[in-house]
Amino acid sequence: MIVAKQKPIAEIKEMLRPYQKVLILGCGTCVKTCFAGGEDEAATLGAALRLAFGQESKSIETEELTVERQCEDAFIQEAAQAVARNEAVLSLACGAGVQAMARRFAKSVLLPGVNTTFIGVLEKPGLFTEECSGCGDCDLDTFGGICPVTRCSKRLMNGPCGGSKNGKCEVSPDIDCAWQLIIDRLTALGLQGNLKRYIPAKDWRPSLAGGPRRLLREDHVI
Ligand code: SF4
Ligand code: SF4
Image: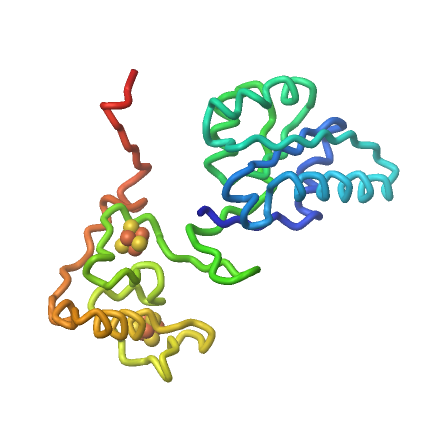
């Protein structure tokens, strides 16, 4: 999932200061799962903003609504009337959702309510960890299902670097050494041979380094 974190309320307040009527638009998929921007967060944020502006004697009306996904036009459509009723939209979706909304509602002010952080997993209740950098050329088969591009602090493709201690990365004792994990897993799977392969320098062109990416599925084009 895409993991995001709600912006500090002081930052959100400054963005909203010029407006009297604001739609707080939650997104019901990734940001809901990571407690950044679903129905509950939209409602709580609306109440907090009304209270915070009220303490300054500034009145603000907020409307809260959550759609399933702000990155898909079919769901965005459900917000059209609410968008039209308000002066600005504070979107709690990831950056893709905010931009999809801005594209759909060209005359509306779209503001980001969360900081989009990474592609990750829920490792345990309350802890989300980054697992994929969207490099565009997945090599997880070679590495036993553990991504050194994302999880090795130095992004080493032919690791380890030699700095790990007790299975932890030399960058921080809170980070597992990705290469220790890779070695342990390949060994457990009887695939140690993978460790003898030289992995050539990564071609970063399929990644963001090659510019904004597009994926065209011609079989789905109508
Ligand atoms: S190799 Fe690339 S696509 Fe695969 S998990 Fe790592 S960053 Fe993601
Ligand atoms: S200690 Fe492990 S995870 Fe950290 S930089 Fe070195 S190889 Fe990568």
